[in-house]
Image (cartoon, rainbow, N blue to C red; front, side, top):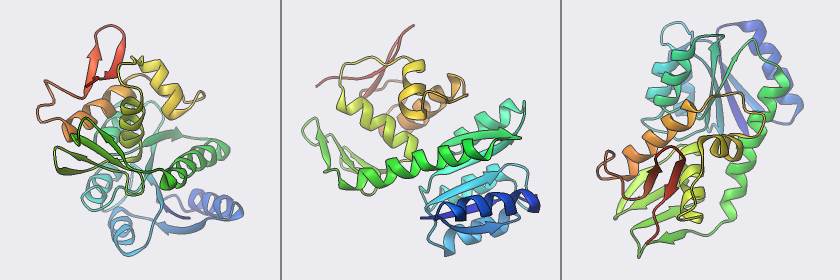
Length: 226
């Protein structure tokens, strides 16, 4: 597994690189946004740890560029109390975020959780829902909706898989944070709302009037039964 660390704080990068290599990961580093995009294109990257504040090209722009050609998991690093940056990071396609300063053990735990889910999904067979209306491909982490191929981020795919595997079951935002992000996840419920909105924009013909992922007002979200 190869991780790309993108941050202009060289001492921090050195520490993260050392810790991940101790766990057996191969590590690439980039110190500015342009270098990050180039390495994401040229290298076989399995996960990216991406700081928002970068020279040449900021982290949000990097995330946006990378999402044009790759669904690699992205954990974004944001400054403490910069709430808007975190929300924008999720809007632009990040899978998770961590605020600085952070505990390296927490970052490693987040990385391991994502890697475990990604590698574990490769053995699952495609799921076909609603007479071919929706097909989930676990190896590619993609969906085919009404014959159209849809690329999904890790969290978007996990949400859709959970919903589709349990049609009719309503999940509160708190439930989804616990199941998809983990019990110790410090994020707020807007994290869920942003991912649901992005998921709908990709799989629904009209995101304002969904036919797959529905809202139970005041309760949460669910997958509509056939």
